[in-house]
Image 1 (cartoon, rainbow, N blue to C red):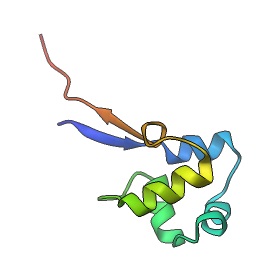
Image 2 (image 1 turned 90 degrees about the vertical axis):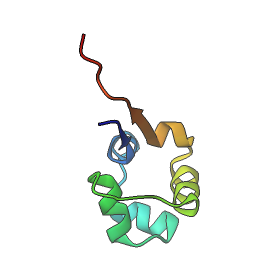
Image 3 (image 1 turned 90 degrees about the horizontal axis):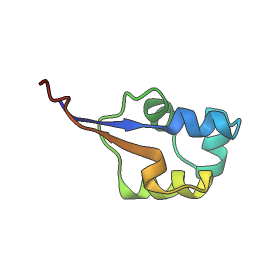
Amino acid sequence: MASIKCNLSTLMGTKRLKITDMHEKTGMARDTISSLYNEKGKGITFEVLTKLCTALDCQTGDLLQYIPDKIEE
């Protein structure tokens, strides 16, 4: 099944940011950040995407990645 991968942990690691740092930068709930960081989120709003991209100085394509189904030959 195709899926969407959240690269928040990778981006935060590159910038050496902790969940607490992101909470302070974005004002978002720690639970929301933690859920996305651990790829447990069920969905994401444009508001959350905007806050994360602003805090990380990135584009939505850096944060989210589409993983298509593997086609067996």
